[in-house]
Image (spheres, rainbow, N blue to C red):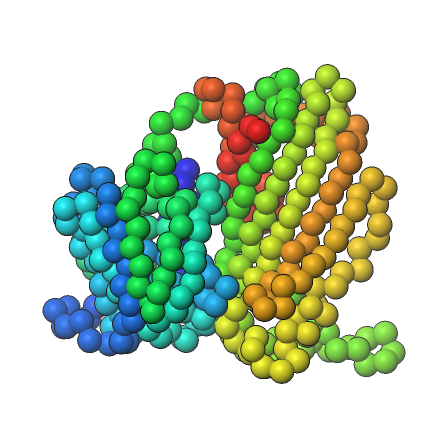
Length: 346
């Protein structure tokens, strides 16, 4: 996690379900009844400076968003779990829609990656609202295997990273001002969502005369959510001034009516685009029907870069670290609402 904006953005993932897992618990803050919890997750190896603080855990799966906390009093409130002796045990729930929250008892295997990590938010108290700034955020790039809804993971410096708001990640960043600084192959990943399917698709019903009317996506798909993971690889030859790229986008659909007969087929119909072929570009779409996911891969062979493109890349919007092996793309550069992205040199 690279900035306060990104840290707070993790909390927004929970709010996308219409809930605040660390919201105020009401007048009766000592009661932990509410939505029954499922299994537990125990994390050890948390840095000692966070002892006495409180944690919330979040991890996306193909079935929904796993949420870990001390308790959930209802769809809009709950408490964070206390960290003690470098360890925290969180009760688990799974959210598959705006109000569809239930005990987690599954057997998922969840793996975080460098740019798509499992997330931990750390707060100063067990009761905090969505407007409360976290004292730190943690990212996990290890694997957690759940059995009957429970799991454990020992955190180490190689599979986890904690950062305080403000981007204090130990890197020194400066503006990219020369194409030579970008020479080589760079790779990174970013995630958007889970978000309502209506954020990504519009639907119209043809009236047979070239017109039509808007279709209610909620009626068609229910409170379905979409998680998008984008994996980018770019190769820049600064001498030849060329750019080649491979973009793989994985869209996973959960909740709502996804398991009803014919609905997944309707989703796939909405994914079929009408884009025209481009010279030097190949695009393929594959589906995983069991996971309800689609993978769109776009490969662009090396193309000469226009002067305007080079000027944009070297205008100072991009930043490079002191070692020259990471570049930082600002938020919204990959599209409105896209997060800040870190690309690593291969």
